[in-house]
Image 1 (tube, one colour):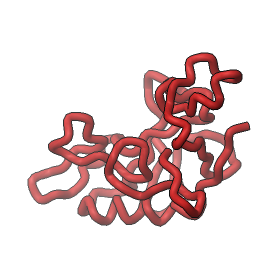
Image 2 (tube, helix red, strand yellow):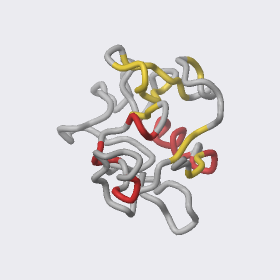
Image 3 (spheres, one colour):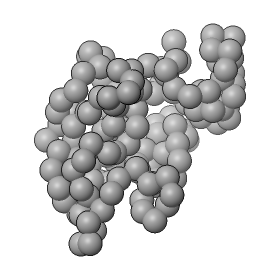
Length: 136
């Protein structure tokens, strides 16, 4: 993710930021109903079990010695959230982790219930101080 001056992830709705891209962006991370509520269909902010499972353009090229396909900007930082197992389930009262069916090392952080998009964005932003740089 993009790193702010305080070392924590930048909160925003652009790629590589701690939040989600919204419709009508062609790469939107969620679907919304006509009232602007997030549809709880498993979509959300993409995460990986470990940064080594990310696509090469998301891994800073300074890590190319460990991951030969790393081509991402060195302005990016790899983060981890928590130290437990990478499993599906509640992250907190507002967010759930949903493992992607096509890749057991990838998941979405999704809303635990349908609600207005601003509530989901706020729930993601509230995790900001829990993310720790981890490029080991």
